[in-house]
Image 1 (tube, rainbow, N blue to C red):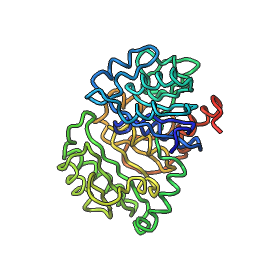
Image 2: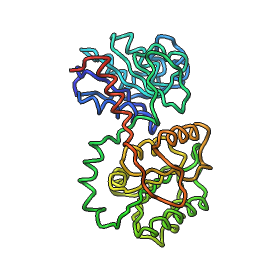
Image 3: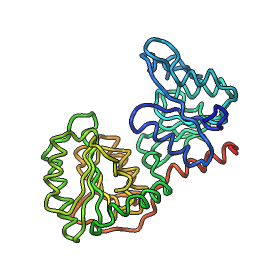
Image 4: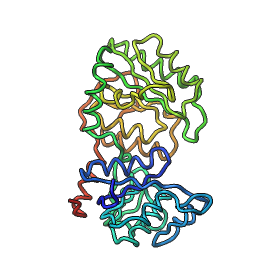
Length: 328
């Protein structure tokens, strides 16, 4: 894409971070450019600069990173930057100062939140209040209504043979990266298999990078008594995660992942949170806010649906951006 595209998205390499900014950009309906981010050891100092700074945005050797090279070669400025995560905040404010563009930032940055045109802060992060602050439920992401529709078209032939109700089981792991206890994984899988069997349905299960090999096999063993398909994290072939969400009649998601529960709520299926012992304080606040909003229930002895509207926070943020700045 040319450097004249109106929207630049700062592409933080951390899983789940850039997806917030990209998901919002995709909903704007205008061209956007991904600007790769890479970090050196000064990145955590740069976030304290009140007007932003590029000092943390370079390779370890100090040479211009790819993203900085794009900035320096730009012949026309962006109209808007969208960023996410504390480290991207300094770079976003520096670009705002350099180009005079508008800036939208996801997640609360340290000290400098009032300097953004729009600050998108999850309610569970207890963000500041102010005229530029937009609270959201969960986090923005890329699982849009159009993405789900396309996934349904792609995956219906491959998953349509599974008996309904189809239960999508999304298994993560401990927040700080240690493998999930196999006993917990097995217990959850058996519970979901039993609930699916009660209604003569099936299970579509997927694990994540934090699940670990032993817990993954424990999930597989727990699902043995049910009709199921299972995708193990890292195995070859196309990841069916979005297809599982699109085809699900119910979704069960482990309590450790802000991203997965937010994405599950984009569907029109009932969403249930399991393994609350994996949740930290931030996750528990998220769960409470979603329960109070009627978006999720904690997993119990039933997968019965209830009336709720799919959650579309990225779409709501895109609407707010259109009111803030003209992009076409």
